Length: 324
Ligand code: TXA
Ligand code: MG
Image (cartoon, rainbow, N blue to C red; front, side, top):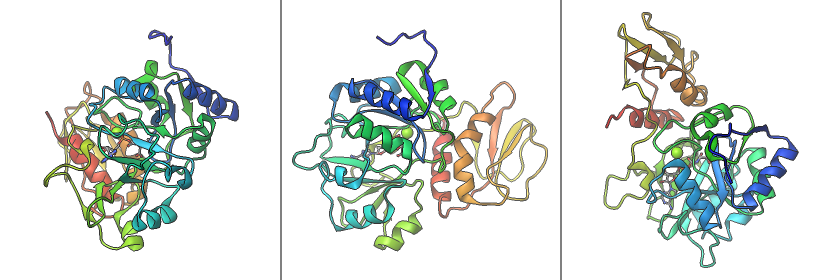
């Protein structure tokens, strides 16, 4: 039914548009929607065919499981088994940019494909009114990876989604730019110690004030626990040079902080004030703007401190810098 030549349908996220999104999702269609982190490509998480359509639209490898989004924590409890730590995190940080990887509950309604065959499910309650309203309108939890082609830079505005997935979604709901700008922090609670499987929009320091020490799990030891961390990600067309002090003549500069070297072809500053929260919100949009192969040979990126949301920023930059 979807016409591949049609221009993408973008609607401002009014109550009518949210109701329309709900109808489409109940009919098994895909809708792109805003969250506080990045835009998501949503489908009914209980509908195996809708979930399969998400993988197809993104070109995503099927071993990489999806995050399931709920309007509230009570709903998530139907599908996932919460231990004490999960309870503490949910109480403190939901709605918010935190995803919990928990055992699938015995009567879990979520598509097995969304879990990529694992016995766990990743659950989150987004802090965005439109996202939660759409979940309510759909009447089901929604599986929603970032609304970009697999491996590409994540979208933080509706036009970003249209550029990359335009004709593959029935509707794009426009809720303006995303406040946080990097994806949720993914925490795994199946091991002895809680593990950060993906640094993201909730800083590790904040998590540790709630539950004590956590470990960083980059999937390098034994079985990788966050399959998504294996695949190449956030790819820009231009090569990235990290830790740059001075831009080379043919490079664009992605700066950070108040003292910026001159001489770049093109320059954007993640945060002139040196604020990592502001930098996270700007990261993906600025990468998109500077990523113009005709005009530069590469993007030089200044150092961002490895603290707070700086960890998530540096994680995305390192992955974007990997060529291959
Ligand atoms: O902020 C976000 O989390 C956004 C918005 C749309 O909510 N979503 C997002 O989804 O980033 P996605 O699919 O791009 O990333 C999901 C991450 C991947 O790294 C995946 O491997 C991990 O979560 N993940 C999902 N289910 C998992 C599971 N059962 N076990 C371990 N890791 C899991
Ligand atoms: Mg993604």
